[in-house]
Image (cartoon, rainbow, N blue to C red; front, top):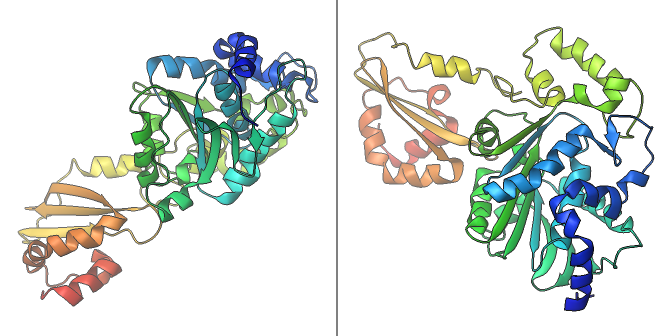
Length: 380
């Protein structure tokens, strides 16, 4: 159903206060204050303090034109907000578009979109009808006013799918951001060149590389929020205040499993504290150790020039080329995996020249895919 100007004017008048106070939009328009909750000073309008912190940061991020990065521990209600924030955006602005994306079909449609659908069903009957036509992945009022959801994998398969959604008022919401490739983030960046925009990246900080981790470190340029499981009302009061949020029993279990062994255990920091760990969950060397290694010269074994390469093979990993001379790192270069083959084609002669200095290069040093490529195309 289309949104007529008169219908939108009524809705806009009713939502004037909601625009400046998103938490009121949730508590009244989406009736979160009526959801089953145990009475607690830690819950206001059906929302936890952490959820209030996020909602109160939305307009600050819009006014400062800063992206909002949210690093969350496990089960802190982030998907609940991710499904409702687009409705707040659409009902307080016109024309407006909201783009929702994430790494998997399950995350985008079975979790985030289902949360949005439930919010739509709770729309307060005293307000003008919400309207719009709701389908599996789109809530549309007219051609210039809609919410659209798709996975980042769909965007990778169809280059440019995440582009072209320009609007005077544009919201971009990314869930499970730690698993969304850098290439998708670059496409989304292109949408925010003009108009009023809000970019929200939500995720568990499980990895220390990639655009999401980098964004969490840039609190000077971004609005950064951390949701700590130990601040959950369920944990603080040791009872189920808000159904579905993490419990004290779960936190205590992870404290014994992770924290007792190592206070800086990457799973404790990322899944419980909502903080970037010193090293990714599946990494061998932490970032601090790698950074410090640059300060020390390597032992000179009489090799004038050597080249170290760690080649990405799957996912959104990156390839690293590191040139050493006289025991010192002279230059390091990082490229996305999809560009590696083209770069090797263009730089084949240079690689061949350098590798003549290293007749002992093996697949374990150079990377299986790159070595095979050079074996086919170069004489070493």
